[in-house]
Length: 129
Image 1 (cartoon, rainbow, N blue to C red):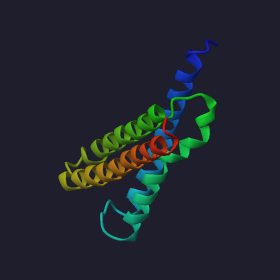
Image 2 (image 1 turned 90 degrees about the vertical axis):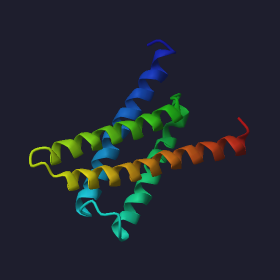
Image 3 (image 1 turned 120 degrees about the vertical axis):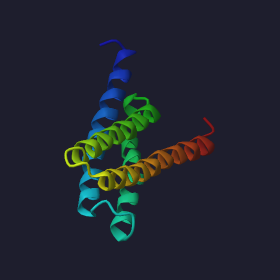
Image 4 (image 1 turned 180 degrees about the vertical axis):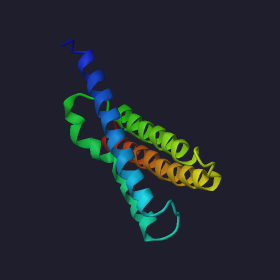
């Protein structure tokens, strides 16, 4: 395999695969807490959402573009969550449920995006790269 193609394919695979796993996990947690933003369940969701993109750090030495894979992971997960919101609320026109799913999903994915950007900034500041 071409030495330039392998990192790109590995980045895409890690980003898309991680995004699917992240979407399944976050959607399961959102369903069990009934899409509420109050309570201990939502705090646990926030912690998991903040930690999931950082789990890709274990493949840093495999030659992938880590920030790109993490961003792709969050983007794929958010896209799946939005499709889920439309799919669940469309048949019966549940506008309140759709708004709740979108709100919780947007908060969780914003926390995910912020966590890996902060981690990347700290890593860049410490390593001066």
